[in-house]
Image (cartoon, rainbow, N blue to C red):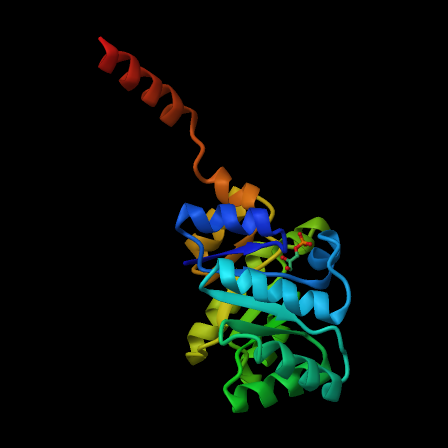
Length: 215
Ligand code: G3P
């Protein structure tokens, strides 16, 4: 399973990269705004910086919601680096844009996916990644992980190559459950990735080993 970090914070991206287990980065307009990155030139420059830190796939989201606008913006983003994956929202024009980019060999990440039907459409359009938001489903008492399982079943039934990128991951159990179900990728905040390290028996075991080693 690939590990992506879900942030536009360069220090956190650097820290996750130093861990040596990072495969890529996902961002969205809210995460960019959180870092104070606004305006086209600043956003493009920020993506360049992220690409320099992490050698893997970097999802860069379009702001346009019409077909022509998404194509224009997506092509500009894709021209920044071969690492860029154009993130497109799950809307009618978005599906058309995913088909266009797929035919041009530009990789896409279909975002804001909340149902198996949406994921099926994204795969049929040729999306490289599909991003079901599991935390936001859990927030409204829906079954986020159940959606990952449904999409896994559907994609396996027909051999779709679209990779399931579990997004809106909030904690370590989301990551572990996604791995059990067979999500291809998780994108998570740094805190959830680092949370996987923790176990009290590791801490007490290490303390004992170190004190025994001192004699
Ligand atoms: O990047 C998309 C997704 O991961 C957002 O997560 O926590 O805002 O629901 P969240």
